[in-house]
Image (cartoon, rainbow, N blue to C red; front, side, top):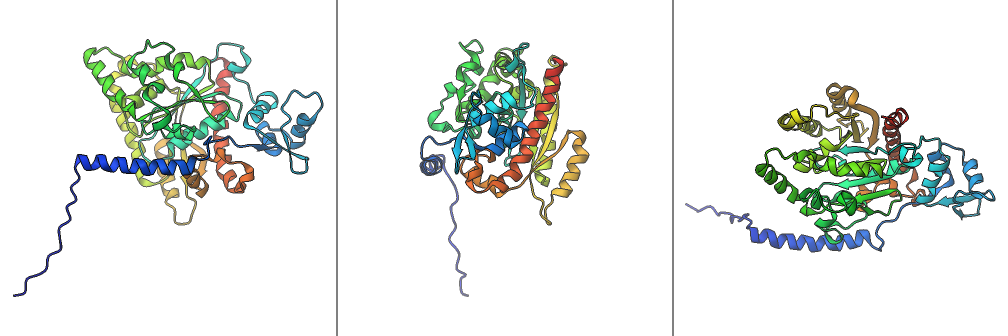
Amino acid sequence: MKKKSELPVIDRRVSLAEIAEFSEKVATLTDELREQILAPRPRKAAPVYTTSEVAEFCGLDRSKIHYLATREGSTLPPGAASGSGRSRVFTLAETRAYVQQVAEIYPSPLVTGSRPADGKVILVANFKGGSTKTTTSMCLAQGLSLRGRKVLAIDLDPQASLSELCGLYAEKEVDEDATVLPYIYDQNIEGGLAGVIQPTYWDGLDVIPAHPSLFGAEFHMPAMLKLNPAFKFWAILRNGLAPLRQQYDYIILDTAPSLSYLTLNALMAADSMVMPLVPESLDFISSVSFWSLFSDIARNFMEFEANKSYDFISLLLSKVDYGATSSAPIVRSWVQRAYGEWLNTIEIPASSVMSNGALALSTVFDISKSDGVAKTVQRVRQPLMEYCRWLDDMYVEKWRTGQ
């Protein structure tokens, strides 16, 4: 009887040494790709804005902005003449100057100095990867700055994606001493969290970046708790942010897609919470798991935080596919039933521009009108600006009433 030929068995085992070799290999590849994506230096530059765009941000007619820019003796930035000279372009800093000085947007206490500033801490959280959490964090920071606000973004994710969006090459330009980690280790450190704040390429936006070493916090806090059972590990970040509230209108926290000790700190430090949610079944189920895990752990220290509350929790549907075969309508109905009034009516549509932007480590706010994709960008940027306006208006009411 003829013996059957046997296929060779593939050995798929991978040793730790092989993993280390692989890591070095892909790190080299990543460095090469970063140079292609981010070159030439400086890697990121803020967009410029047309007179029409400045007018839209300010809620004024285009002719009014043109008059203010060209009027003799005007204290507002003149911008730069474009084309035939009848049009003008403005830098981000100049645009923000117009918004702060002539827009009908209620000024924050930080600007008026009418009373001590009380910046608001907004957490962007989701356990599901690919939920646009980090992109949403950056867009909120950029959108709120375009309403004249001063914003601080804090990256609490060891993957440091928000730091990358802010123009920092995390593994090369950031070390653990430039993150929140030194403060986590020692709350009496000189300068506190203020000592690690960095400016970004985006006017009105500062950042405390992240680094892979942030994982150290996940070992330090339970170790401290073991030594001192009364140690309030969940309040470290809240205490550190307290003095920064006097310097910023908004502090945006971007967390890792897991319920880590740093995420718990962010949850307890935040005044409000935004959860971007892609309307797909697995994303919806993951969002439900988030609340289940959070509540289970929160019960362990609820007696210490009996008065903890959020100004609001907002579900923001993102990357919404409006195609005929999309599952978005079905999942949207689930989200509506589960979250009720937490679900915001504003939705962010899916767009190839956002996907392409991710390849360039940018957002739709980074793209100038002159880049040739104005209509596509506007389709995504407009609802994001509307959402920022909605969020800002929530706190304007509190500023008006002194809350």
